[in-house]
Length: 257
Image (cartoon, rainbow, N blue to C red; front, top):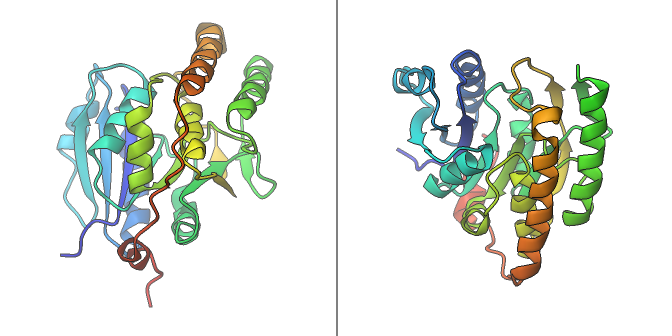
């Protein structure tokens, strides 16, 4: 069989309700790719049936693997998944598939040229259905302004749909120290410091009920996390060498004839 060309990390903390529908949607999309793909579901110390759902997932053309991450936090789970990957192209998305995975075709084609492609809800071409409160919308605006200082030129660091050349993602994840909701900012900032500027693409995004983020509970800790990321980046020397996608990787993501 041909090697796996694309691996997608799905962090999951108590996602027994939303995971089955999300996995089915993602696997159906991955089956249509011209290259082999796998899904790495990272069980982030769930107390529900999340892990059992993955263990019993029926076999098919898309391999679904279970990875355990005892350290709490979405950032810790994504980092564990990326570091468990081996493919030339590595990405991650949320278990609820709030971002329509149909954009995968566009993302993978663009990865022939760009090492970091991220979904963006602020892109002019995006279609966004959001049901957030004014408090959460205001908090998101403040977050974007602060994050923009750490990752200049990126309008949406938090859309849960990001893809990288595999070696680059693994190098950035090894240096990543943030485990909470702001981990995306650090991961992208480390890619930028290696010379790989993220390119944003429009997405179709639907607000799916069940988000675990609360402005009241997590607002101040997230701001503190951004400050810590800023401090960490200042103490870390920039690494300018960026691994390029190999000819084999590019061949694997060419469109089917």
